[in-house]
Image (cartoon, rainbow, N blue to C red; front, side, top):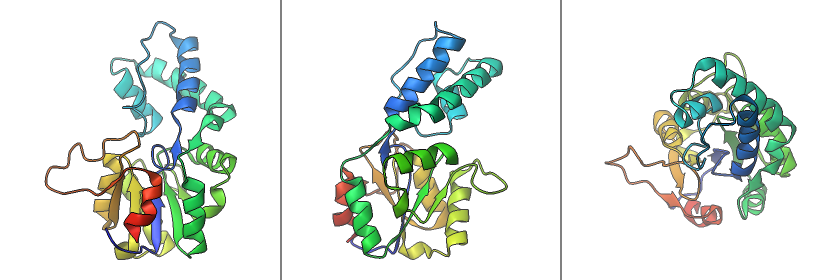
Length: 217
C-alpha cells in the first residue's frame, strides 16, 4: 500500500487503544457478584465484538438471565472506572496529530457504546483528532452490523471509498472494508484475527501503529 489516503477510519479496541485491563477489571467485578464460581479465561481472543456477543463466546452455555445481570453490572462499573484503565498504543497521539495537521479526515468505527468510547478518547486526550465517532448506538436506528455502520459513516461524511482506509484488527473490520469498497489495513498487534477466514486475498499488516505513516505514504 503506497498511497496517501484522504480519510482514515479506525477501529478502537485493539487498534487505537488497549482496553483489556479495564474490560477485565469490570467483567471480573460483575462475575464476582453474579457467579463467582465461573471460570475466567484470558480475554485476548474475545475482545472486539459487542459485549453480549463476547459473553456468549466466553460462556456459551450461560442463560440469558445471568448474561443480562452480568451486562448490567459490567456497564455500570465500566462507565464509572473500567474505561479509564484504557491505554493508547505507542505513538497513537503523535501520528493522529501528524495526520490531522496534514489535513486528513479521521474517524472512529467501534462496537463499543458511544458513552464509553467518548470517555476513553477524552481521557486519552485524542478525541479532538476525530471528526466523528460511529458506535452501535450512534444515531437512529441503531445498527448491530459494523458494515452497515461503516456505510452510514462513509455516506453521512461524504467520503470517497477509493481515498479511504479502514484500519482494524478483526475479521469484522475486514468485512466492513470489503462491503463498503474502502482499503483495509490489519492491525496485527491487536486482539482480533482479521485474516482467520480470508484464504484468497493478501492483507497488508500493520505491525505497530507507528508503521501507519510508512505504509500509507
